Image: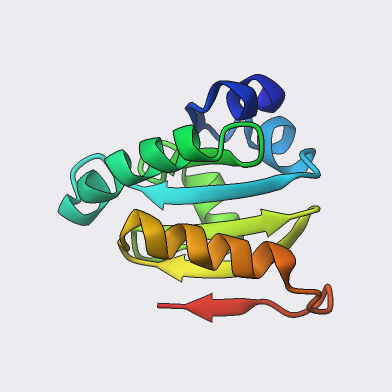
Length: 127
């Protein structure tokens, strides 16, 4: 399923039931945005994520998790505030991105993280 989402340039809606298959089993580059339906920052982030999915189709899976509807996934990452984006590369956490940012900045942060040969047990948190 993530292969199709990656190729099509769509934003994948992940649930507690599909999280393991869609995210944990994927060895590519993934950004998972933890959001809610009613938060204004989350609403502002949605079109940016859609643009990111189109711009990086074939190279990046863009996924969202509605934390109100899917609390298990959010709890497993300790997500307390939204929006928060996790950048995963080759199955490891590379960056934690808090809040909304312009598309160009988001792409730059993704490129930096995916090129960085940081040790597997370290990640960078950016606000």
